[in-house]
Amino acid sequence: MSEKRLLSVMRKGIEKYKMIKDGDKIAVGISGGKDSLTLLKLLSMYQKFSNEKFELKAIAIDLNNNDKKTDYSKIQEFCDSISVPFIVERTDIKEIVFDVRKEKNPCALCSKMRKGALYEVAVKNGVNKVALGHHADDLIDTFILSLFYEGRLSTFAPKSYLDRTKITLIRPMIMIEEQDIIPFAKDLPVLVSSCPANKNTQREYVKEIIKTLGIKIPKIREMIYTALTHPERYNLFDKYEKEIDVL
Image 1 (tube, one colour):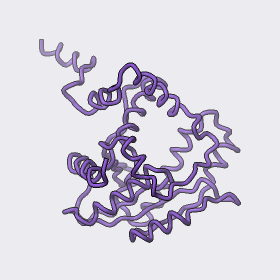
Image 2 (cartoon, one colour):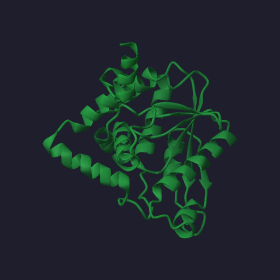
Image 3 (cartoon, one colour):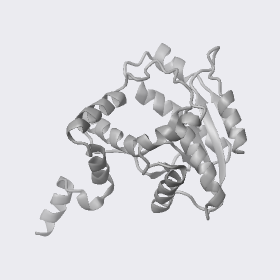
Image 4 (cartoon, one colour):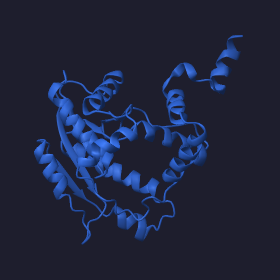
């Protein structure tokens, strides 16, 4: 997918879910991975022609606050090249999750702590919206994770308001597929993950399951995405119960 097409798909998602308003101060959460850096690049490009005038910042939450601090110099150079202020917050999250708590399934706690730190830094810097790099495949994987491991029919929203911090979360790449992000990100300063649990998580396991099913059902991701995002395809017990009440 071309750069122009990626921008078009992102714009469609932004407009459909009314993610950006005039005067917004938006911070992109930077993990150092391909998704967050792609989002930052696309938003910096979108900023130039958007009818809504908004400010853009980038915030990275470093899980290490010791001698293994992450080197963000390449990302700093990238942010400088697109004129986006870059903020790095050093934390002890990795030590707490893996050394102190010794979590067997560390992703949930790590994610909670990382997002908490991100929102705190965003508030300190006058941000009213935080943009996360989740894409269409993440929407699907989160749904399957909730179904398999929590017994819930649940996934994240394209836009949500956090009462405690007064921040609105937006996910501008909600309509973009991961396969289209990969080639776009090849020239971006993507960091190699230093997470001890990298490639050995429940999310990776779910990805493999869907990939395997995709051999027999080539459009499996498209079908799940359609089911999740089209209300007329929703037929579960709560809907039936409402119908029963009026019969």
